[in-house]
Image (cartoon, rainbow, N blue to C red; front, side, top):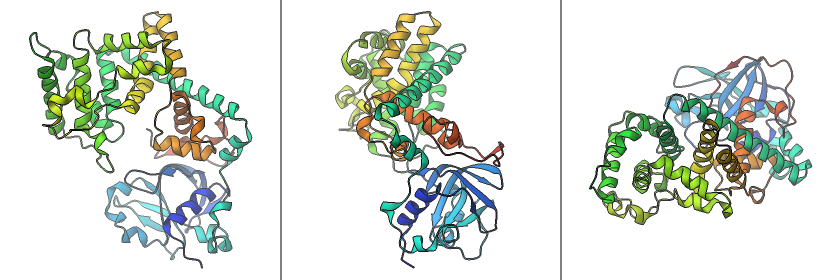
Length: 425
């Protein structure tokens, strides 16, 4: 048989996983691949967010692939808790074993590609002729305008969902604190998100604003805020992920950006300052003025940057600013407008959202483009990106392909509604 590397094995699995309705595990259990997941860029299994059904029971989690079952132990996965979310072990060829044991002691089924796919195909795999997923085929049949319309509608659904959640939180949290929490969480994306969310509660906005005493300079205020936040981060029991974390995503650099924003809006407060920026941005091309209201350059923090070994790095660049604008600021301003019966603010905010330019694609968005057979050139607006995320989180990882506006893959009725081990984001 032709020698197959694990990289090729990944492609064989991913592009054939939906090619047949029913698979069988090594122990003879019936297996349906509802959603094969996406390549995992973090720790753990090779694919994450997969949805499968084993003997009618639906499971969600990660999938790991090896040439042989022994690869699990050879790579040390049996002692690594990061692999405890794996629900299926895919191998090219089995060795008689039925199950793989996780470090938690749980057992997961083994599936042999050799037994579930044609042996001649495995002997000489041709990646250029591998079948595409059903949603890829369906999306590629439609006109570009139809695809983009679906993404725009999905993006607006995500926007309205976020705004509705914010409206509910405004009933129990002050607007300024809620906006601060949202910005902190966005600054923590994605490795330190949980840590930053916790930090925004432990060191709330009123504590930081209380440091703004009369007579202190901006440099002194910046130093006080950063010292308070960074010391709390250092003493926090929360552990944030540093795996494959780039220097520009350093948690301390992000905290420095937050401190700079509080200094920038120290007179009117960050709430009024950013809401004013939203109002002034309406009608201006591409929302660049709104981005400038959030961007923090190295010279904005030059008084601290060298001492904190952050020289030359941008604390908050354009892409991160756009992320905050789309995910936090605009849904927040829309919700504020609704709560205050300020229809002008809500309408202007929605228009800004619809027209805002796209930013760098994240791993989920890139995955969705590949899955749908769309090109990056089509994704010109942020709402297109949000639409990709909405489809992924509302349909793909929930196994709701038959309900997806771009989906075509039908799941038979023999899969039970019960969901076990579903991992929500």
